[in-house]
Length: 385
Image (cartoon, rainbow, N blue to C red; front, side, top):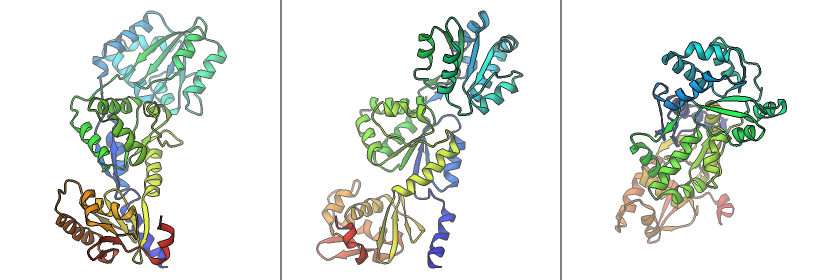
């Protein structure tokens, strides 16, 4: 019964309570942020890119005119929002009717059900759509059919399609890329710089990526600021990079960064993955008869969420690296951000930490030596090293 009572608060504060998650998306950022916040996360939004409006995109207009000039044999539609945007932009240029007429006479391959819906909403009919929603399966079908001498239009969406275009061209196809939505760096780099600083300071627990251009843009900005090695180190050890799918992860993987990805490449599964992975990475210790779980900016004490100031979290992490062992005031002072040389700052921050935790006996004062987590005796052997 006691265990059941301790589990009840978990549902009230959400699985991501106490964690801070960075969101780099420009599109659907509000939706992703809301999903994270509903599960308790603190969200830092910093769009790592901006989208060129379709009506202003000369490259899209040129590609559209090229397909109208000489119709393709096949059109590959890759994203629902991109396909709809392409048709709407064409209508704005007075080319909508011509584009729909051409596509009504050619084969259309739709990558997945959402794209299929967008195609049908435009009054068109797709010939085929893979159940896997995989571009690799689309490529295999085209190559199996044979594309030599054929003209293939591919609706792009700012995402790289590694090997897709090259494989078609090597097989003899003429490929026309339709660059729906081009990505550019954000006009205001302030939020991106603040997100980078937070990642380097380890005040972020995870950063989400929903497009490869956003990942590439964040890495490029870090490199421009001379922070790329430090950012890669943060991703390797403390800040979880979470990508919506393998294509999105490519720029990070190119720099040797391991990422986590959901099995289904959607925002919901991405959030659910964070709900599993972030709590699993949190340090949980038996201290003074309590279960203490150390999260990003808060602590669960017997499943009760206790927000902790940054200075207090710095002290708590320093103590938890060697639970049960005495940590000197000098070492704790070095752990405090911007504390200077006065060890009184440690005492002040420690008093606030104990108040925040709501259980003063969790941290013991060892006279003339420092402080220690009051690790339960039965756990001493387990955590001795």
